[in-house]
Length: 107
Length: 183
Image (cartoon, rainbow over all chains, first blue to last red):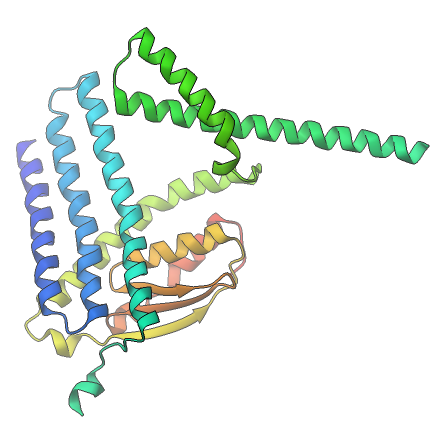
C-alpha cells in the first residue's frame, strides 16, 4: 500500500516539476500556458489520489469524509483550471498579442 | 363557452405540471445542499442536523430555480451519459499529458513544437454541450480553447501538429452523443 502511495506522490511531484520547467522553456505567452495550466491538473489528481489512499489505511467515518473532501478539491481544480486558462488566453487575444511561430523566428 | 372551458383545463394541466417541475427542482437542490452540508461538517448531532435541514430548506426554497432554470426528463439520461464520459476523458488527459511532458522536456523543443490557431465549426446547439466541449478541449493538454460563440464556432490554440490534428476528433462525437445532438 505504502509503495503505491509513494509512487503516486512522486508521479505528481514529477509532473509539477515538469510544469515548472515548461513555463521556463516555452517560447511565448500562449505556449507557456500549456504546461502551466494542465500538467498541474494531472499532478494534483495524482497527488490527491495518493493522499486519499494513505488516508484510507484505517477505514472509519472520519477518514471517509476527509477523502470525499479531497475528491471535491480535485473536482473543483479540474473545473476551475481550464476556465482560468481559457480566460488568460482570451485576455491575450483581446490585447492583440500574436502567437509565436517558427517563420517569425527565422526572419 | 366550450373552447374557453377547454383552455381552462389546459391551463390547469400546465400549471400543475409547472408545480411538479418546480417541486422536483426544489427537492433535488435540497438533497444536494444537505449532502454537501453532511460531507463538509461531519457532525451528526441532532441540533446540527436540525439546523442543517432548516438552512437547506430556506436556500433551496429561494434559489432552486437558479440551479435548474428548466428541468426536463432528458436531463437524467444526459447526467448518466456524462458520468460515463468522465473515465474516458480522464484517460485522454493522462495520455495527452505524457505527450506534453515529452515535448516540454525534449532538448530540441523549439523544433518540435509548432504553435498554431485552428478554427472549426460544430453544429452543437445547447450551451451546456458547447461549454463541455470547450472545457474538455482545454483540459486535454496541447490544446486551449481561445474563443467559443453560441453558434458553435471554436478557435483553438494547439501547441504542435499532432495535437492540432487530433483536436475535435472523437471528443466532438462523444460530447454530441451525451447531449443527444447531431454533429
